[in-house]
Image (tube, rainbow, N blue to C red; front, top):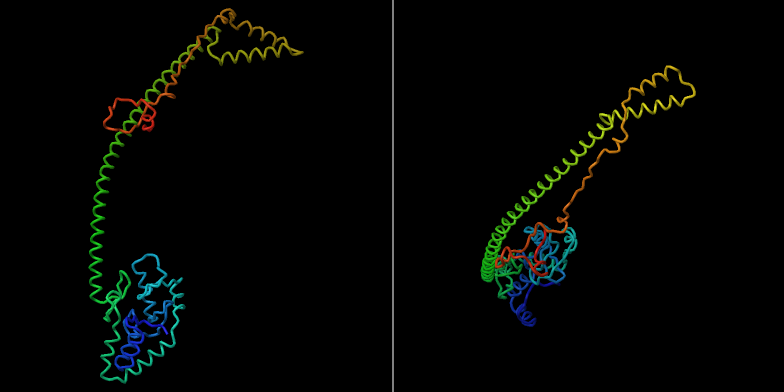
Length: 340
């Protein structure tokens, strides 16, 4: 039979004291059958694997109250006496694990029956039923479960324990406040550095925009020179060959091809032959020598490839003591610069 009685004396002394007086005997059984959670005589007593017994409803409520301050269910309970951890999968599983001890139940029912016949002595037994040994001082007193450490403590030890918890919490809060002040101080320094980074970022963007605008301007100027030279050469060429443009030349080529087909045909009428002859006389004379002497001036382009080898923008660590105009002279100083 499981026992919740934490004895300091030896077993022999307990036996002698129990047999010496009926009152002591009743007090002993009341302590033995008292639930450590509700501090009353057990109803539907269940034994944990650690051999400590409690009321079945008290254990179920104790398990559910263990999840009030957590977002994730804690599927375990700690024995209020020895801190044995009982794990379970769900509250239904816990209910199936908590089997009522029939011996303890019969003993509790027998004491409840005898309690009805005690009359005036009931008050004394009732006071003894609500007492157990404190986990800290070991004295037989009214106990409460501490929600901080889950131990059974008397009012005096519980008050001292709460004072210790208060002092410990105060020390932790002071430490956290110091760390928060340090973090805020460093965060202000970081924000100041970030403002400098933003200024550098704006400088880089402005420089790149100016560089881009200058390159685009040079590109437009070079393309304009090409277009003007192309147009002037085109006009000069067609002027020398007595054609206004390439479209009239294409019409002339088409006419020549058509005339050749007519002359090469087996049968050609006199009218077509005379019309072809008149059309050929109307074509202006083309000077072959003039065409050969038409000049074409070639162009060349020079592209500066220095941008592919030169670093126009450098972002380096600012040491403060170094001169801003001083350039890195060795490989270690070059490694400290992050090129952008």
